[in-house]
Image (tube, rainbow, N blue to C red):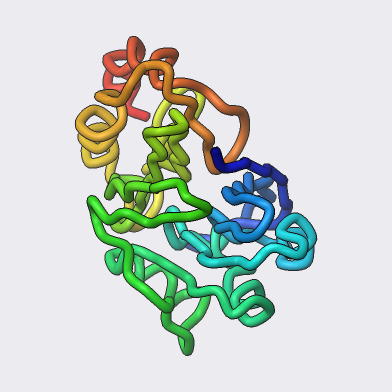
Length: 208
């Protein structure tokens, strides 16, 4: 069974001419020998310290808003781990890294093995065009990035986002999972599929 490490890094998120202070979750799945990082925000040194002596096999991006990828290049340079991103989010990636492409493309249904555990990529657009979640069915874990939080969907009020699309993603791809699935989010506290499922109609009615 893989282990799961969690740290929080702090920095800023900038889009559409605004900048906001944010705290981001970093999730590290692995064992004693190797691991993968889900999102690389703000502080490559802190993430490297959490990885420790293990071999970093992948930097997996839930999406390309700058607060989720702004340490990805430095982390990749330090470890030689490839950065994976869904190609529909290149429009956002290129704003942070105009001269550096991601190393590999994520695709819906793709399986990525880390420390003996199989992560399935779920393309869940809405917060951004190439937003994805990573599902480890065997462990009952979902890494939702900014698609689903405790209390509702991720924000859709800025460029390249759409409320109807994120609702379709959550309804069709996430709320169908086992209700006991623990949702490890991009910001804030964990939740479960079962805790969020009853509130879908409320989110639709309020429009966010």
